[in-house]
Image 1 (tube, rainbow over the protein chains, first blue to last red):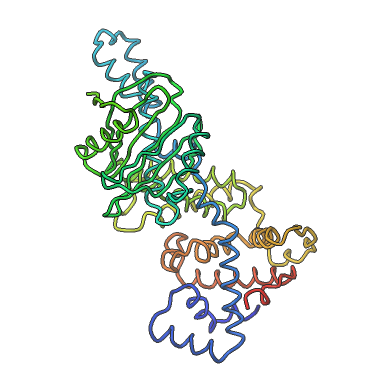
Image 2 (cartoon, one colour):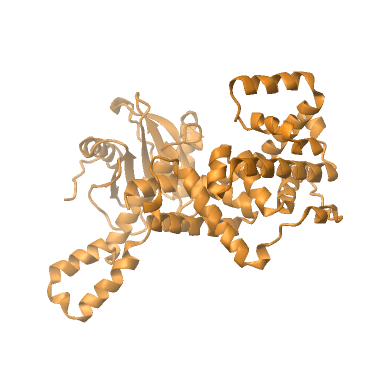
Length: 263
Length: 171
């Protein structure tokens, strides 16, 4: 189509791309009414756009590959570990306390790395999906029974979806998360102010039970624990104190006992 | 490095992946490109002007890596001149109608010269403004507009050459 390349028709491109306002926009609208070639050219531009979206928009809905999340969040251990090794080599291990602290910071301790990653997985999953106005959930709350059965089956442990209506949170639904080690479920809730809270859960493959713990990242805070079957994390954009209360409530409902916070 | 920057960066990953895939076609090459982009963005985060949209800055970072890969690797120079566009490559039709049109647009993209392709996907797919596209690529707006119109024209010729029935469909 030669007409795409004429200077006069640049206005048509600008119109199709939302670059025109006021008089310029009106002039193109007038041209479109009068000129069939212009209408055809505009239709072709719009068609190309829709074909491009059809071919590539699927990428937006895909889960982010773990390699990219790792690239973004980094691995502090890889940077701190060499120093730790060097420190030990020159005999600084005598200062046991600092080395212990370093080990904790650098995820060298294997217990630490698992718990950190549970909180991190929950925080990342919450950040990813709570911001989705339309695609926050895969299965909506209307299919709650199906959602519960499906996620229980995929996660590999019977799980009852907590009812948090009396705490001000309505269930929106949930989704399955493709996790590198094991499938995980995410339940999304919303309160009257449209603020979202999510419950992340996956099989506790470590077998180790933990008390309640809080971890914060920017505005988000997550309360997480491991029971005999599941690793769980409650995440929302609320204060630590509010999360302590909410975490305890959900813990009590899920575990049937009162939880204790680790310090 | 604030956690805020990382969080905002992660939120942009889906768009970076779509942009990368439309630039280089291949999904795993595209994710390699996104990974390089994330690493460079974290290293150069001090250069990011917080008053501007993060996405456009990341597009520029990603695009720069793509261009330098493309320049240093002859394999990626699959952009053809307009003269090469009609060399009878048109015999591999997908069997299914849906795949047919998707394959058609991606095949047509592969035939665009790289300079036209990047402008086209930035504006037609990523929907950045002409001004942002000019900043991302580092050329005047006039150059953006002429590359855009040439890209659309070339693409249209390929689509029509391949017998697509776009005019019937859009009615």
